[in-house]
Image (cartoon, rainbow, N blue to C red; front, side):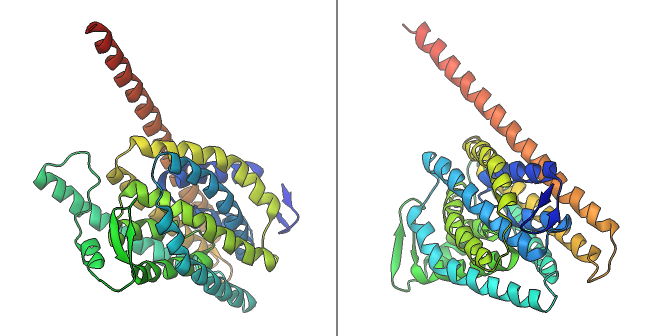
Amino acid sequence: MYFPFSGVEFPLWYLLLIGFTVGVCGGFFGFGGGFMVTPSLAIFGFPYAFAAGTDLQHIAGKSIIATIRHRELGNVDFKLGLLLLAGTVPGVELGHTIVEYLKSIGKEVYMLLVCFIVLSCISGYMLYELSKVRRFIKEKGIIGKDVVPSKLPQRIQNIKVPPMILLQATKVTISLWIIIAIAFPVGLLAGLLGAGGGFIMVPSLIYIIGAPTTVAVGTDLFQVMFTAAYGGLTYALSGHVDILAAILMLAVAAVGAQIGSIATAYVRGISIRYLFSIMIFSAGLGALLRFIASPETYGIAVLQNVALVLVLGAALILCIVIIIYLAKGITAAREKQRKAEVKSQSTR
């Protein structure tokens, strides 16, 4: 299919598959999916600036739908989400400025390398923390709880620099300056990588602020809604958005986001974090392979297809796992309700 705004021939089935898969994973993990979509669009020939701008437009619309569902599940801290914008919006503006400069000098492909480094570091830290969780659960005999044994959140909360903000939904009191200090680099990376920033915001809310996993997921989607909209506008004003591609992805992502959001009600926070770490590492590795395959770097063209299979394959597998979690959860809930009804009738 030909997309006139970007001037690119792109397989329609692949675009729709990306949209649905990212919709499911985004609703489940709490990110817009830009770290997946931007490299994936770039793999098939979208200029990087168009890939980033188009992705941000689609993320903004999808995040609205996912946020509405998470709100119904009680997973959104609206106060925290709005305060995060004080840091993310300036960060997005700076990131976009840097991308435009790199484009002007023909070096924008190096953002794929940055993407790999950032995602690998986040994935590695999450797996390290999760190994500590497993030991903690084994020692304490805790089952089924969203455990974060790190002492960092408590230390951060003990920094009493006014104004102090009470976050009732997150059950945390923290300095406003800490929130902004966390949000600004997230916004910067969002602007640089054409992403909503959820791949770093969710771990930050969990491991630095101390938010429960499901609240981190819902709150991040809420702030991504604004961050992506602002980032998408900046790219649109510079003429780097393919609106047709964005609309097509959003149409299928809306359905996927509903599925992923509902699934969080049936999965433990620890399991969500494990799957999240796998997702972001595979996306980062795909970006590295795309960087190596680029004519501007090493020109190993075959790696472009390898990157495609890796990124989309990992996302599809996790998408299927999430749908299975949802199906099992709904079945178990119905069985529990049936047994409760039978017991109620037998006692009459």
